[in-house]
Image (cartoon, rainbow, N blue to C red; front, side, top):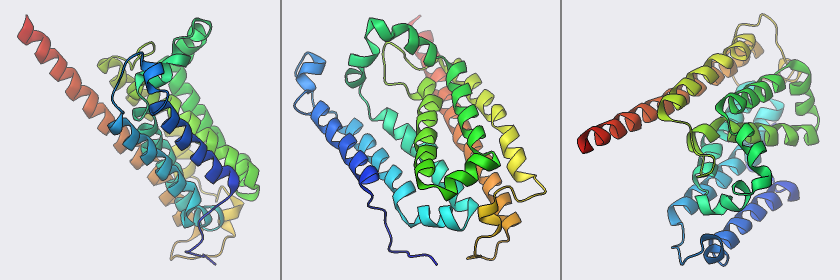
Amino acid sequence: MIDWRHWHNEPFLVGGLIFFGWLYAILAGPLRERLTGASAPYPRAHAVKFYSALALFYLAVGSPLDQIGERFLFSAHMLQHQIIIYPAAVLFLLGLPDWMVRPVTSRPALSGLLRLLSRPVICGLVYTVVVSGWHLPFPYDLALQNKTVHILEHLLFFGAALFYWWPICSPSREFPPASYAGQMIYLVAVVIGMTPVFAYITFSQDILYATYEYAPRITWMTPADDQLLAGSMMKLIGFAVAMTAFGVAFYRWNQATERADSKS
């Protein structure tokens, strides 16, 4: 059964998070003046967001939630993915000052590729294809049975989430967020693009993943109830987050318009 005291301490997970935390500390500390070209203050607000992202990622994949999602409940696994895709990815991007990503984004040799990859159409397609593809029965069940594949799944989800949020939260001046109107259209388009996988999971008459069909029951839910809950979480949480971002973009657009009108 579930060991509620079990938190993962695998070197790959813990070491990876420590490495990213250390790298951020070096860039924001000793190398800050070299990267900014001036005596810039320590990016305290950015750092809080970045380290919060690392903590949330560990909470999603290192806490007992991982054991529940891997062995017992599809809905718990879905919650893991929502934490990775939404707060962790958003805070990760918001935690990066422009000067910290500029050594990569300002390279002329990469400008063409980065301009292509940062287009909203490409970002939305990458996110939709990666997340939808992993929810097909074979790769999803394989991830539940094979630890290495499961790690790959979560890393790809996080990477796809960074693509998803780049047109909204880009920290780069060279490749900035889309216009406010563009952000609103983009968010609606991604919600529509994710509808088929939501419908596939939620309204399927079959249990899609054998792991959950034959898992020991630790709640009152049947496998069908659990699958329905997971599909509903995918759609409702995703829709709520997207519409919140939509509202923020609309508000900022309205504020920018009012400021422009007051100056004219």
